[in-house]
Each structure stands twice: as C-alpha cells, then as structure tokens.
Length: 621
Image (cartoon, rainbow, N blue to C red; front, side):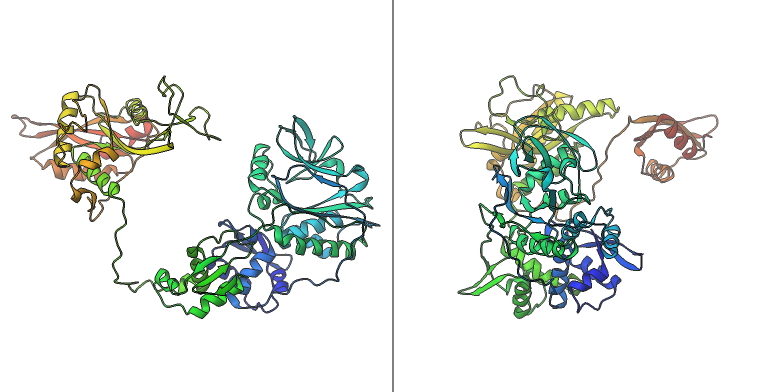
C-alpha cells in the first residue's frame, strides 16, 4: 500500500511530522513501513498492511489511525447535497448471499476527457495507469476510501445490470483483453446474456471510453469469501480484489459514493439522472463489549490513565456508555474488535509499545497455572522416550485413501483440501509413522526408532471428535517390549491393568490413547512440568540421502575418544554433520602407533559435496 505524504496531510492539515516520522508512527501502530522513496517531488511511504485491517487499505483509514495517535481532527471533502431523480436504476440483484450492500445511480451529459495532471500524477505514483478522467476518478476513490467502485457505459448495457450466480460455464473478456472461462456459481454482473463484469474486475464489452456520455456507477461490498475464491480460482488478483476479499464496511459506502458523484459532476460535468439504488438486505451492526479500563494496566504491566483509554476508544468512533461497567460498541469499519482484549490492545497500541519499559519486571504476581494436565503428561512421556534413545517426529495429519481402513466408518474428510491426494484426517498415528519410517529408510538413516504424539480424528454420534495418541516404532519386538515396560514403570502405571488392555507388541508399530492412559497416571505427572528449564533441542529436515564415509587417523600416542570427536566435530562443522563416531581403535605393536577409524555421516549434501568436506576435515586431500 503506497501513501503519498502530501495527500495524507490534506486529510490531516495539522499533521506536521516528516515523512520518515509518519512512516515510523505507522510502523509502531502495526502498519510496517517497507520503504520510503522520493518521486516527482513527492515523498511516498510504502506500507505492508499485515493485519486484517481492510479499513487501512485507503487514505481515509490510515489518516484515521494518525488522527487518533496525534489527537488531530480529520478534514473530509465537502460538497453540496446531491439531488436524485425519480427514475429507477436498471439493476436487479438475484444473489443476496453474495452482495452485502450495493449503491448505484446513473449520470448523463458526461464530457469525458483525459485526466487532469494532478489525477494522472497521483495514480501513476500508485502504480496505476491513467485511462481517462471518469475511470481514473473511480480508481482515485478506491485508494482514497479503500472501497472499489465501477463505471459502466449505459449505451453498452441497454437492458441494465443483474448481479447473479452463474448457472453454466461461460467465457468472459476482462478490460485488458484476457479471456476467462468461468465455472458455474461464479458471482457475476450481466446485461442480457452477456457478462459485463465480475466483482473484482470489469469487462471489455461495457468499458467507459472518451465517447461515453451516459454512465451507471456502482459501489458494492461483497461476501469476502466469494471474492477471494473467484479471484484466486481465475488467478486474477487486482487492486479491487485485494480490498474486496476482506471485511469492508458497508456503512462507509454512502460517504465514498457521494464523493465519487461530486468528482464526476466537477470534472466531467455529469448530472444525476436517476434515483439512488441502495440494496442493503442485512445492515451491518456491531455488538457492545463490556470494558474494564483497569484491565489495561494488568495487560500492559504499566500504568495507563483511565481517561486515556476512554478518549482513545472514543476517537476510534466507539460508542461508550457508562452503566455498571463501561459498554463499548465498536464502529462497523472495525470488525476486528470483538472482545474486551481487542479494545485493550487498541489502547496499548496508541499508548505506544515503545513506552513499555523492557528493563523492569512487569509484576511479581503469580498467576494460577491453567495448563491442561495432558500437556504435562505428554512432556513426561517425551522425556522418558528421548532418554530411551527415541527420536520424536512430527507428521502431516492428512492421509490418502490407500492409507485409510477398508471400513471407512467414522473417517473425517476435509473440504477445500490443499492436496487432493490426501483428503482424510488421520484416524490413527500408524499411517504417519509408516510414512516416516519409509522416509528414514529412503534417506538411509539407521537405526530407526521413533515416536510421535499427535491428534487423531474421527466422528461418531456426538459429531466430530479428536484425541491425543502416542505411537512408537521399533523394529526389534523384544526391545520394543522392554522399552514399553520401562515407559510404564517411569510413569508409575501398571501395564497389566485390565482397563488398559495392553498386551505385548506383535508389530514394530505400537499405539495407545493418551487421554485414556492419563487416567491411571499419578497426579504429580499431570501437574508439574517434566522440563522446569526446557532443554535446547534441534530439528532437522532431510532433503537428501545420508552419505556415510570412513576415515583412518594414525597417532603416536593414545587419545581420548571424547576429545577426538569434539575436535573433528568442530573441524567438520555441525551444519551438515549427521553423526560422527569412532568404530575401531587399533594399536600396532611394531610401530607403537594408534589407528582410529572414524565413521562420519553427512546430510543434505550430494556425494561429491560430502566427500570434499570429508577429505578436507581429515586431511586426506
């Protein structure tokens, strides 16, 4: 999102900060500055709007943020009240679930022309190509208010417009000549049987040009999921779609729409020729939130005056009522404010995170431990299994049809899956472990003994369910049986308990329900962490096979194996070293020398790369 500093100052005449300071202020408010540039004698701030803040994708929203921060009044455009005619606007909406609000009217006696220099320059600085004055004014309104709008040439839509969901496949040509093959259920705008526009991009067959004299203008807010789905399905991301696929404020449309009409009347000599069409089936409202100003200090850890909190929320256009507690109703352009914590975050944000000291303790108050007992129980299991030499793995919770049991009762299928080959949420950890073992063997990782703790999913009469399972793999059944006995002994659980129904393993793969197991665990294991000071652990992603190479080292005297391993681990470096061991020590009675045989395994390297590092490290070049 690019912002011209001088344009921002027109909305905030009292803003005296430099472009750099303004960029810093917006960054501290959460709208990160990606850079500053000077172009055509203008200072341009490039922002990354990372939060779900559709209101900040226009000058109005960002000016509102700065007005609250600096306690400055906004200076909005002024224009005379517009008088509409009695002629109806030729519009029909048959997709009420897709259209949240739609305003439209017609204007005639348009005198379109190339854009005035100020408008062409402004759009160019926003990386938008000027087309003509009328089209450029719609783009100007979009970047000013953050609300996309569209103009149609009435001579090219004689039967008016219909907003509807398509029922059949049909082709559509965009303004730039791109042909899109539309699927059924695409939200589209039609005239007769022709598609003249989609929600996020106009069509070539109804575009406004310099000969257009009668136009229909509209501004709408749609169901953002529909816009997001359609724009991504057809791989057409536009400035309009970036805004429309977020939660825009339908109640802001009248203000922006009046501004657009005023500009067209001024710069294109247009005159209103119809009534105002306002389709708004379900007006947007926000619910009041109970707010306790004293909680702000508890969250921030510092003292923030109560009056600052109330003034800030009022400046954000929140409606505040004092009853038993404070009741705060957020404005409709802030759909992200839903709970009390959201209001507290707003107060702290405008107080300034930079004003919260980092060198002082927040509080000595001890809070009640609300960690679920299962979390502590899982920590103890992890500690025990790691001490037994097992590696923990984390796998994908999705499985393929082949990995599902033949009896598909109770399986959970996903919708809109990112990978159609894996449509089912796992019902067991065993398919995931099998896949992990296959990957280990493919990359020549030996020996393999792994465990995973994760959720499995199923459905029954109560609906969709999930629970934690523990799964292990150990190819030697006697070792697996021994490990399980040590695990239960450490957990102080008797595996012979009839309710657990645990029998000796008959397969290298073993699994148990942790939510069932925890019922037999001592209270200590479910209330205290296994790691008071969590150990430093490392995770690795294998992309290539493990390359194992040997090397011999001859020394005049005997050395400590531990010291030798430390020396050569440091020489090789830990970035690509999977493991290093001394496999043999031979003392030659004739030469009195000692020969140490090393075995080094390298990962995520080609054979040639591994050999090069190996030869250099052991001085074998």
